[in-house]
Image (cartoon, rainbow, N blue to C red; front, side, top):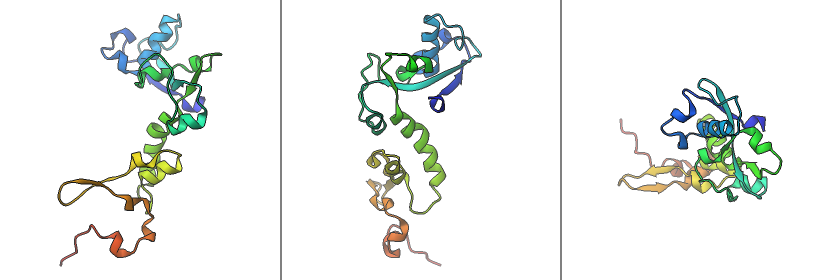
Length: 174
């Protein structure tokens, strides 16, 4: 679980945040304080947390996004943030939200790193990570201003002939 821990510093007292309900580290600090804990609950301290779901689903179902959160709380990020001790507690029913980590932490970084590599795109990377690639298609703005999904981006550029690869390019006029 250590590799999934996110840490964030409290810049003020947890109760002084006007948008505390939307900030994961603040929600965790408030719960820790309510439980009588003294570490990670004061201004200037760092709050460790993980994103988790209360579910009976398997890790594979969670990673694919098919798991249902059985928690009575909302579905926002702050509502799914827990101190690592809360998740590892016996009978907590909490499991790491692997889908969150893949879609929000891993995929964006890998996509940026692989962007210069010909034949890769966000949808292909998502597919390699076991995610639904249809949620990561690139949108291409057409000449008439409309949007269309570009499925050609899923094919490696070397698999396309030049006419197909450059069909949306204007001819070079010297």
